[in-house]
Image 1 (tube, one colour):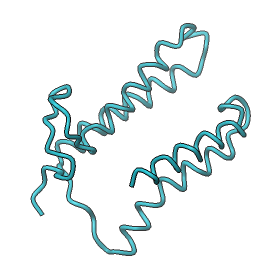
Image 2: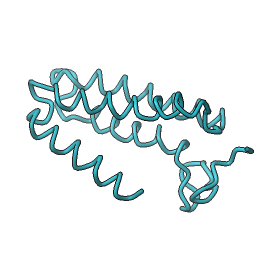
Image 3: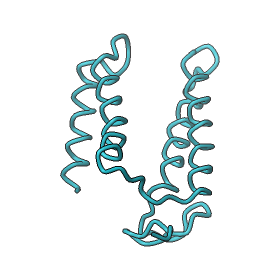
Amino acid sequence: MAAGRYLAFALVWICQLKDDYWQEQTGYTTVLAFIFILLPLVKMSVTGTVPPFNTRSLVVGAAFLLGAGLCFYLSLDEKHDPYRVLHGIAQVSNTLSQRPARPFSSPLFLGFRSQGAYNTGCEP
């Protein structure tokens, strides 16, 4: 599955180059983002199943994602965020929002215990 990650990274990089890194035109990157959002939804629709999930992790991840969205929105105006601090906080919060949903085989990370590389911590 590592090849899929590298392919996704390469596609995002190519799209952002074509969009001049979100400066004026964001067409390619936006289309690719919607495709990445739709892929798991289509897979769940076709298979008719929802993968097991931990409700607490979902809530914590959603809270970090909400914070990331708020910081990103506030960072769009250089008058309010001249040093891009809020943009950096948005990047970190976005990363933390994905952490509860993707258990790694790493040691304790901000209170989320690792469940192992393939165990989501949910009972089947």
